Length: 120
Image (tube, rainbow, N blue to C red; front, side, top):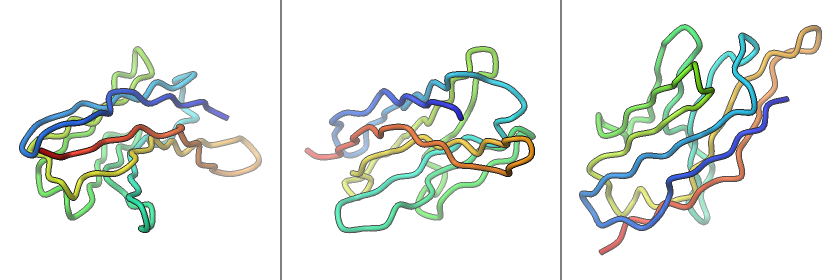
């Protein structure tokens, strides 16, 4: 398995920006994709952005061009740049990795989450 640690959350005013970071315990070909999900109180966890090892990206519809996912392969660190933040972006943001375990399949690893609060 891969351990993931997020950082970069906090309080920001509407219209502001934050950059979340996710550090993986290793970076190798077993990590098929890394991404970000979020969960607000009383709601289901939803996809924010996903980046495959091949460079393909997927974003939640609500992102609408405001967020950018990226990864530094050398440092095993992923990032989520969030601009034009809205109060409805307030949630706990989780880093996710799809990890291939030879002979067993693909499993999800999750970070502990980082709180993002958008409020004036």
